[in-house]
Amino acid sequence: MSLSQSNSLLPVPSGSLQIADLPTNGEPPLRFSLIIPTYKEAKNIPKIVEQLTQLLDPELPGDYELIVVDDNSPDGTWEVAQELMPNYPQLRVMRRVEERGLSTAVIRGWQAARGEVLGVIDADLQHPPELLLKLWGEIKRGGDMAVASRHVEGGGVSDWSIVRRFLSRGAQTVGLILLPGVVGRVSDPMSGYFMVRRKCIADRTLSPLGYKILIEVLARGRVPWIGEVGYVFQERQEGESKVTAKQYVDYLRHLIRLRLSLGPIGRLVRFGTVGLTGVVVDMGMLFLLSDPTTLGLPLTRSKIIASELAIINNFLWNDVWTFGDIARRQPGMRQRLERLLKFNLICLGGLILNVLILNLLFNVFGINRYVANLIAIAVVTVWNFWLNLKLSWRVTDVKR
Image (cartoon, rainbow, N blue to C red; front, side):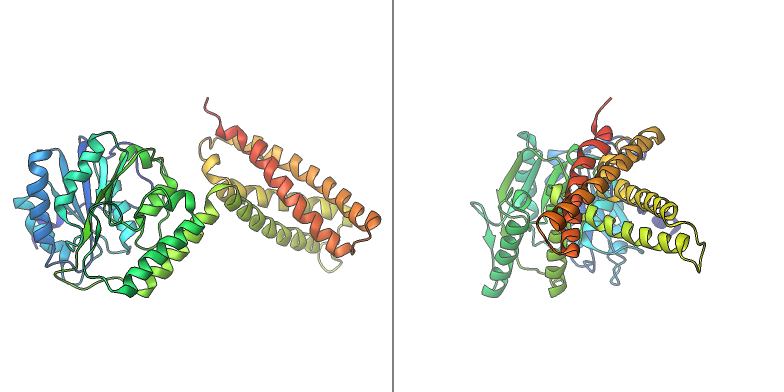
């Protein structure tokens, strides 16, 4: 391989999986960028690049790009793609060595892309390239996203077995149960063939798992208008299928992770988890400060210090994790100190509420003191979460 070929590779973006609002490499923007994630697709890549170019050249002359993102395929897929570049000026190639996985490959490609509209298509020709212009037509009509679907008019699968059909529909049903407001927005949430306007996912931190990148985009993006186009899923002509049991496990893990990260229930779970770390800090510091074998400070003073350190611990984790998406909108030190002060005051109020509920349940209703304490902790956790959501992190949710 020549030096010029080596230098022609796109650099692999690093850091968080966040897509910029505009291209950051100084090159002029394009109308459309299509990502082709690959692994061991050396036989298919010349065919799909040729077909896509023939389709897009008349529609978007000089105003599109094809980006092959290869996960260091042992069959040299990225080298085959590089050799095509002199004949296809719109083709660019990225070789990933450190990372693996279809979803992250797509996002890394989007990060390097210059398109106002971002798309993805499989390299194995199971996604018919000729459908691309129909998808583009949905975008031209004003759509924010266009999805190729097997479950609308004109769609279907070619030679799938009953078992594979059952697994596909079963996976979609599970998605509808766990994430109805996300999975239910399209007829084929398992599709890996779609395009979306960059503005819909710009500045959103994506965290995909497995192959189902569309669900991640629907869950974390802002996609008001979605168009769907039917297609028949074709059987692979070259290479081997990458569908394994692990992909179904990753899909389920992805759904659960999205369920826990989206909406108030997900935040409440994270808030409670952070609270457990605070208990560890509180107990550990109380021992270190008050135990006769350590510092031996007075109990009350030790408890005050331990509680405050636990509160600071909880605040830092909540600011980064539980309410991180809100906190990042105003990361200034003054705003962070405002949140810390409010968090402290709310925790103090929660402590008073805890004592009142404990005494009410134990002294008035005669409930076992330990059961009463658990009930009080649960009530106060929800109370603290609600107040912190409305007050402590509200300051960062206002545009100024």
